Image (tube, helix red, strand yellow):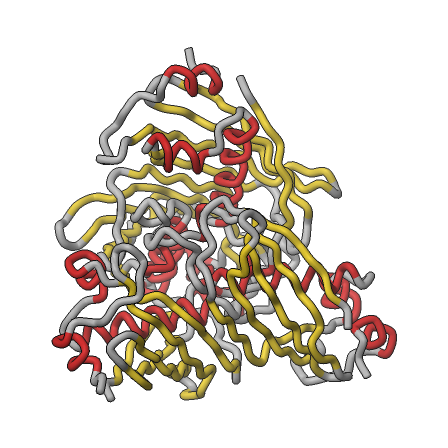
Length: 134
Length: 134
Length: 134
Length: 134
């Protein structure tokens, strides 16, 4: 199944007064990870929305926090497609610091495809193949 | 000119590792302040967008930071309409902590009205009056 | 086990271009919910950090998204303590819109208590009782 | 005076239901800009905080919004030091989209240096020179 790595640097805005990254921001990084994975497969998510009227709507999300991310660290978000069907897709994430190399968090998100009327819909065949859907 | 006070409590998410509220979040509180001011005048901003197709687009924003807001404090956002015309509106803000009572920040934002096509437009007369526009 | 309801209003800042609340913000609302639950038990979380040097560190979080929250809605966050021991606590959340009354999301977070040196620690007895810990 | 360019990509999290970037997020991008400018001068801001106990505390911020930034755009943040003394520093920012090349916003922030006791302090000479302070 397709996977992709992307890097980002922790922003001051993302920290909280505990001196580490606020927990909800890992879900923002997961968004960055899956968008870059989809881009690497040849179809920017933006185009899916604009040209195809396809929206990736989240059904559930979970995150296991292993070690706190800190301000200014380089963070690697490794995203893979864990499961893909015609109507849903599940992403898995491993979030690590680059130096020292250490696993910070693991998580997953599940999504369904919606059309412009917000109804569940099937992903057209050409995209499905790229995602590795059965 | 109309003015309004609204209260909110500082969220953990809004702090940063300096142990105080991250500076961009004051602009979020200004949004809360102007939305509640407009609601107090009898027309929720949400309805302006949905029913009238009117969007309040920001032209500039500024904030002077006087004393840092801290986690869990009750914060009072005092919003007033500083200037209002048919096509623009300017809000002024005073942001204070409730206890101890202390001025934390002052600021202002200027906006123009846009229609659904994103073109500058005039606010219908009935709203203009409520805003105190000349 | 203790539970608590708190209300908040969806901010413009919390929406995204899909026209609904961005998914990471539900975790911010969960933070608001558990802080208000702990406050209702008689000990503000802020005091735990400041006076006791106790930090509630998140171990995992998950959220199931059922129906999208929209701008300006009043949202009810119902938080309960699902499990509590001397060293950990688990919160459960039900997030609903007030009008129409509809379940928007369900989730949970698990936490451990850390001391000022970031070592896992036990919650003092008086707090444990209040949380309903065995 | 020193200046620096950094690039970032607009996140879904940064948009709002108007379909453009929420206005407070430009201040987050300014933070990214000034941090990268300071890094390019040879002293990461993180080290100033950790090793020197120096904190860059914001005194005021302003932003003029010229053209809306959109989801997934590459954005260039051009940051320069507009003024620097022993106790204060002012940054100026130009925020543009890369393609099409278009100015999106301009702004500035003023800061003072604080020590670990949160008292205004002077920046040590070696840093002052790097910032181009008189």
